Image (cartoon, rainbow, N blue to C red; front, side, top):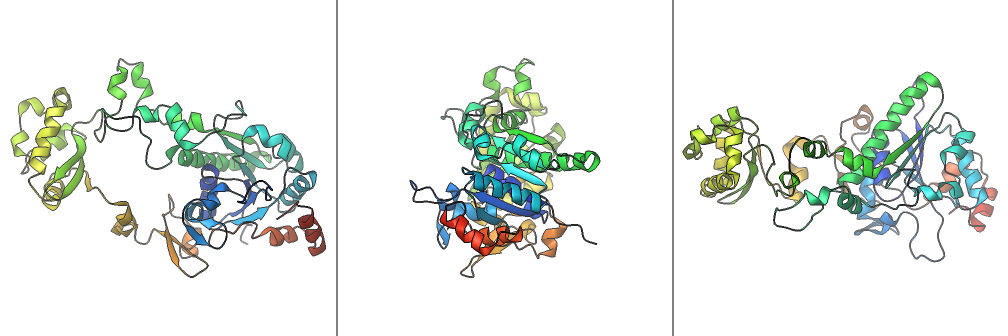
Amino acid sequence: MTPPRPVVLSVEQALSMSYATLRFVHLGWRVIRIEPTPSPNLRTRGDPNRHIGRKVAEGDRHSYFVGPNAGKEAIALNLKEPEGQALLARLIRELSADVFCTNTMPARHASLGIDYAALREVRPELVWCCISAMGLAYPNVPGYDPVLQAQCGYMDITGNPDGPPMQNGPPIIDLKAGDEAFAQVLHALLERHHTGVGRAIDVSMAQVATSWLLTFLPMLDMGSPPEELKRSGNEHRQFIPTNAYPTADGFIYMAVGSDVQWQRLVAEEPFCPLARPDLATNEGRRRDKTALHAAIAALTSKHPAADIARALRAAQIPHAPITPIERVMDQEFLQGALLGTTAPDGRAIRLPPPAVSTQFLESQDRQLGFAPAYGEHTDSVLGEVGVSPSELSSLRERGVVA
C-alpha cells in the first residue's frame, strides 16, 4: 500500500521558505501555503512576490512568484483573529500535518498563533521550522538577501578589486537558507521516526550565510591578511590561473587547479610560450599573477573561442564559454532534466531542474501544476477538514478567510 503523502503547511512569503517548500513539492509532498486575508490599507493581496515581475496569469500571478510556487495549494486565513488560528489548528489536526514552516518575523509568531509552543500543543508530532534574518534570538530583525550579503561580508569579497561592493547575481542566501530548512526538516522527520515527536528548527539566514565562508574566514587566523580575501573579479584567489579571458569573438573561462594541469596546458598551442620554469608551480604563478593573466589574455584574444576550447579540451582543462542567461536552458545537459508548468492561457513555461531528480517528478513527466492564485484552494482545503459551505460563507463575511 502506498503511504500517504507528507503534508506541509507553510505561512510563507518572498523566496527563502518558498524555495524550501518547493523542494518538498519535488518529492511529491503536499504543500499548502497560507497567506493573510486582504488588508484594507493595501491594494495588493497575500505574498508580496505575487505582484513582482511581469503579469503571467489573471490577478496576482506575476513572473517572480510562479517558479518557486509551482505545484502548491494556496489558502487565505486571518491569523490575527482567534477564529483564524482555530482554523489553522483544525487543519494541522485533521490533515495530520507533518511539517509547519514559516518565514514570518519571529516577533509576530505568538500573536498569530504560529509559535512552536502553540502548535506543539495541537500536534506533538509536528516538525516546526522557521527561517528568519538572525534566528529566534533576534525576533525583531527583518531580513532580505542583499542586506545579509552586506552584513556577512559577501559584498566585500564580490566584484572587481577596484570596484564598489557588489551583491551576487542569484539571491544565494535566500536559497541557501531554503536548502538548509529542507535538510533540517528531513533530519527532524528521521528523528521523529524513532522518537515519535517533532521538534523546532531555527534557521538564521545570517548564520547560514556565514557558514559558507569556509574558505575565507579561517584563513584570517592562519596568517592571511584581509587584502588576500577581498574582491578579485573573476580570478580565483588561490588557484592561478583561473579567470575569464577574451577571445577573438567573446570570452572563455578556464580553471587550472594543479601544476599537472598547467604542464598539460603549456604543451598546447597557443599556450606554449608560457612553458617557463618560473611558472611551473602555483606559487610561482602567483608571484606575478597580474602579468600572467595579461599574457594569457594576449594569447587567447588572437583566436576564436572554439579554437581555444579545442586546446583546453586537449589539455583536459576545465573551461566553459560565458553562456548568456537566455541560452542556459537550451544546453544539452539540461534536456530531460528541466521541469515545466502550463499557464492558464496554455503557454508552456520551462522551470529550472530540481537539485536532484526524483521518482515523483519522473512519474509526473516532470510537470508541476501552475502556481496557485491567491486563496485558490481555501474552500476545498477547509471543506476537506469538515468546514461546511454555510460555515465558509459566514467565515468569509467576517473576514476570517478569503
